[in-house]
Length: 258
Image (cartoon, rainbow, N blue to C red; front, top):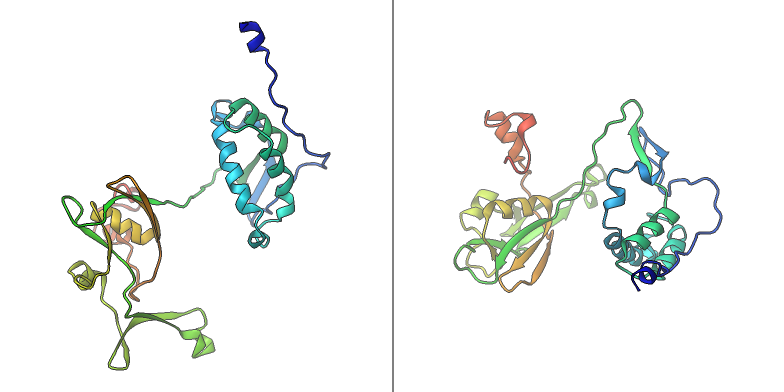
């Protein structure tokens, strides 16, 4: 029985139609060279969780095939591989690995002169929060105040296109809104603007820099927050301030070191 089980057939992976030499769907930016390589050239490829990657790819297909994404990628380029992924049983690493090796070609990305480069990704802050102020949850996360207004200056003068100013209206005049320091000292408190409370002011600080994040509440529910507006004052990079004060060097600055 063990022998028979070991030889049980796997569900075949649908093969793509014959294609010319593989080409990247997205054209590389200036200064970036892409060259096709083998999956065996990818460090750790054989040990990766391909079943989990297949589940993620299926979710991506739902977005990739939406008409709203046609301006970014050609939906037709993704449709065959997305349809093939739908036919596979989710979770199997072996079948999933075969799927990716069948439908995709990995590319090595390099600069014009240097094979080394830097890839960056979007960081989503993860915080712990509560609907009420209690215990460690003392840092408020505010909703957008109703008196905070933003004016598109390009509507008033063509030379100001792309510029805006934010503030509040006082006696029929637009005046500066509260600064970050004033907000930290309670300029918005007592107005019912608190969405929730989090347990770490530093995490809240990075949430505002990133513009979005996820807060795990006491009951385990995850709440996603997104950018709603700015107070109109110039952004001050805390890392740059720490460098100018001699607290850190440029090489030492990171989110963790801050």
